[in-house]
Length: 403
Ligand SMILES: Cc1ncc(COP(=O)(O)O)c(C=O)c1O
Image (tube, rainbow, N blue to C red; front, side, top):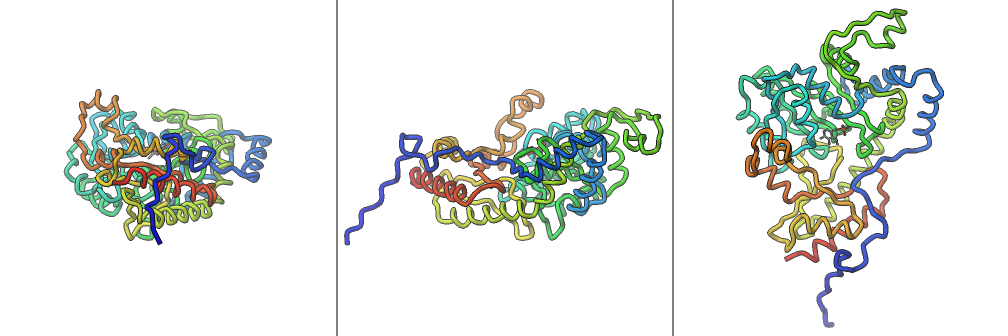
C-alpha cells in the first residue's frame, strides 16, 4: 500500500473551518438553581449586609480550609490589602513577591505605602524561588507574598523557614489555589495569612469577593476592623449587644462583602469538591493528550502537590515551532478556543517601569516563561466536547506550525 503524508488542515486564521462554532472562554462560572434560590431567600430577609450569612460563610470556609479564622472582603484585591495592613506594612517597608502574578499581589504592598520587591520564579512551577528570596531580604523586609501560580502552591516550607529566621510574615496569594494541597496540608492553613478570590473565573464565586484565612486571632481582629473603616465593634455585634457606641481605631475602608454575596458563597462552597475533581480530570486529560505534541509543554506538578488547577498554562517550545506565542494564540482563538496569557510580569507594566525604573531582563526566568506561556480553557462547567475541542485545536495549530 502506498502511504501519502497527511497534509495539515487549513487553520481557521487562514480561512479554514474552525474546530468549533462557538467561542469557548478560558473560564466561566457555574450557577445552578439552588444558588439562585439561596440568593433570593436572602433578598427577602432582614439582613442584606452585615448579617448572619457573613459569619456563616466565614465559619464554613475556615473549616473547609482548616484555618481558625476566615474574614470576608469585597474582592480578592481588598483581601490582599487587608492582609498587607494586618502584616503591618507601612511606608519604608519592603515585601517580597513573585513577578509572575496578577498586578493586585504587588499593588497591595503599594496601597500600604511600602515597596514591592520581586524575586524571580523557579523554572518548573513558575512560583517564587526561595533561593532567590533569600538574596532580596534586607533590614526593611517585613513580609513575603508567595503566589500559588495557576493553583500550584509555592514552596511554602522553605519560605516559612526563611520568615521564621528573619521575623517576617508570610501572606500566601492563594487566589488560584482554593482546594490545593501542599505536603498533605490544605491551602489556607499553611501561611500566616492566605488570600482567596471569588471572582467568576475562580473555583467558587460570589460575583466579586475575597477571603483571608489565618490561625492568628490578632490578625483576624485587625482584618475585621480594616474592612469596616477601622471601626470596632462591627454593626451586628453592636446590634446583638444593644449598644450604639463605636470607635474608629485605625484607618480602614468599606471592604465588606454583602449577605447576598456570602449566601452565594455558602451555596457554591458545597460544590467545591466536585468542581475540583472536574478541573483535575480535565488537567489530567490535557496532560496525557499533549505529551506527544511537538512544541507543547504541559505544566509541571511537584510530587508533593495536588494543584487546584485554576489555570492550565502550557509553555511553547519555540525552538520546535515556526511561530511565536502570539501567533499560536491568535490561531487558537480563530479556532474559537479562548486561549489567553497569565501573566505579563508585573515589573514590565508601564506603571512599574515608570515608578521603579524596571527594564526587561531583570527577572529572566519569569520573562522567558512569559514569552512562551499560554493558558488553555479550564473550568468546572466544561463539557467533554469542550475538552476534546481544545485538544483538537491545540493539535491542529501545533502540527501546522511544527518544524
Ligand atoms: C493571583 C491573583 N491575585 C489577586 C487577584 C485579585 O482578585 P480579585 O479579582 O478578586 O480582586 C487575582 C484575580 O484574578 C489573582 O489572579
